[in-house]
Amino acid sequence: MTTPSNPTAPVPADTILLGVSTFGDVDLAADGAPKHHAEVLRQVVEQAKVADAVGLHSFGVGEHHRRDFAVSAPDVVLAAIATATENIRLGSAVTVLSSDDPIRVFQRFATLDAVSNGRAEVILGRGSFTESFPLFGYDLSDYDALFEEKLEIYDRVRSQNPVNWDGRTRASLRGQMVYPHVEGRLLPTWIGVGGSPQSVVRTATYGYPMVLAIIGGEPERFRPYADLYRRTLAEAGKEPQALSVHSPGYVAETDEQALEEYYPHWLAVRNKIGAERGWGPAGRGEFEAAADEDGALFVGSPETVAKKIARLKGTLGADRFEMKYSSGTLPHEQMMRSIELFGSKVAPLVADMLAEVRSDR
Image (cartoon, rainbow, N blue to C red; front, top):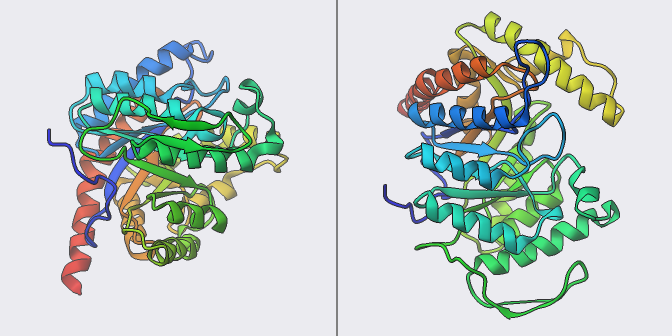
């Protein structure tokens, strides 16, 4: 396999690269009890093997520090996946930089890049869950400062030049070199954005590709963020970069099957997290609104999901779409089938739809 010189460059107007991601959501054993984290982690490797076999572009693994998610060390899981796959790109979704060491983040993913023969990517984010802050001894009142300073350090380390830095969240750096280096290019690095203009501008100012996490509302409503990102890149004199969209989804043979299989697991997760954050309980109406043609849930038959993805190319100019295929206690077997359909059915349908749009112009 040839290592791409710039795997985060924008793709042609008739193309969108497809991938999948997971947080290692803990599903249930036959007796109805939650599976052991160890079993779930082994399942994630099996799911990645299917994604590679059906030709998907990327596989992402997110970081959490909760009972309901098995993955707390994405780079370790991705290293295991690297030995079991051949072509698929391997990324975090996301790495919580605010509560990590930016030097170690670079070292771990540079190592992953080496052992995977150039397939590693890292997505840096602040994280929507905050369990890692008290776990690693950080004060949530420093939420913004930690990310700002650590991103600055990471960016300097990523340059593979001696690092000089001063700030308030850690000791100064004076001419240190960080190893290992990445072969032939800089480590592919994205920044995950939840939808604040300040985060969009920061991402573009650094010249990094951006991942829009769209988990609610209409994807079209994020068009101003996509426009702001590209405008800020140009104003900052940066090279054009790829824009990716990350949303939940599930594929089954028919719309009805997909909705019925996904709904109870979506509802359980939505109401559990909602209770933690002070939201009111959800029901079928909220779910169906999120899963309709204008919603943020990419749930349905291959044709339905493909149409929603193809629309992202026109409305946001998306270069990638990554579907978060796991959802609470959704069974492993159903996730495996969803990944298979996503690669074998959805991907070719999206390609055909975009080709048809191009031919009509």
